[in-house]
Amino acid sequence: MKIDILTVLPELLESPLNHSIMKRAQEKKLLSVNTFNLRKWAINEYGQVDDYQYGGGAGMVMMCEPLANAIEELKVQTEYDEIIYLTPDGKMFNQKTANHLSLQKNLLIICGHYKGIDQRIRDNYITKEISVGNFVLSGGELAAAIVVDAIGRLIPGVLNDETSALFDSFQDDLLAPPVYTRPAAFKNWKVPDILLSGDQKKINEWRYEQALQLTKLKRPELLKDDDDDAS
Image 1 (cartoon, one colour):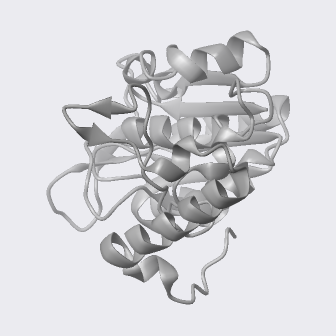
Image 2 (spheres, one colour):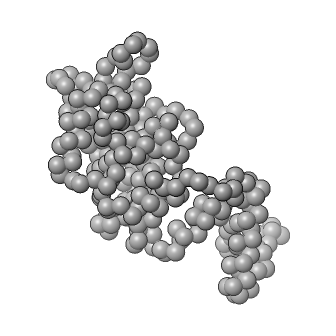
Image 3 (cartoon, rainbow, N blue to C red):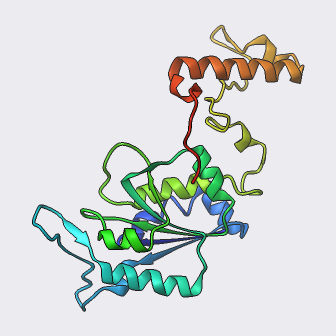
């Protein structure tokens, strides 16, 4: 899988995408993540990619010309399944969307900055708009790192135990059940007997019940009918 990221601050993505699971995914050639500095397509020698917004108001807006030229050039090299813009008013990113995107071959992620990007880019190039939460970040770079990590770990072969991702929170619209490791007793706090029983069928039933109860307690909205899909 190939993910290209267009940004004015590629250095913000260096650490999260070059360590741990994402590093291993790229070393295994299962995932290719490439960052492109939008200033390569700046409109002048000063590296300008933004300007004041029409109609007045605080904050700069990323300009049409650099973004359009960058996207067009990258599209010549790669046929993208989705061109994604990260924005607070996008559709909320969730596990279903991550699952859907992990099945794609080529993605282009546009990181906004300042006050956002010129609407004409959104109208004519963007195929999917994503938000990582009801809050505002300084730019889309940290959001891009979140999206890439969530997608990348789902690619077959990335995790050492491929079944691990199947039991993550939200995969079945349930939170993950409690987990325990050695020792079996610590300060008189004991691991539930069922997990030491060796009876996998009963263990799986216990885990499901725990996941269901936790979801009812902490995130009951996940149990409601959800009309949203990954599109």
